[in-house]
Length: 88
Image (cartoon, rainbow, N blue to C red):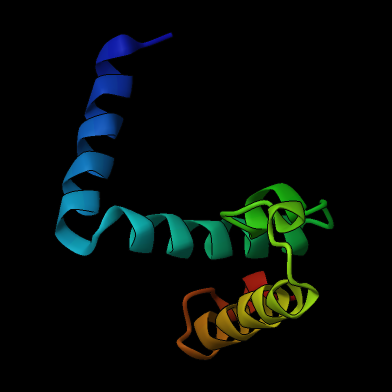
């Protein structure tokens, strides 16, 4: 492992987290990661939800969380985050 490279990556994430908020960073990263996994026909459940759905007691909250993730993926697509080539 290249510890110097890893240290630099951690510092970049730390700086961004402090700038935009760690929760926001994690939320955005999980949606971007899930979209990347979907584009490569990989299961996205691990990257898709920052909280484990089974921890939500109310079924309505689970459904809301799922719908919210799909809305965010669509929003990011509409923002042009991914190249047209990537959206296939």
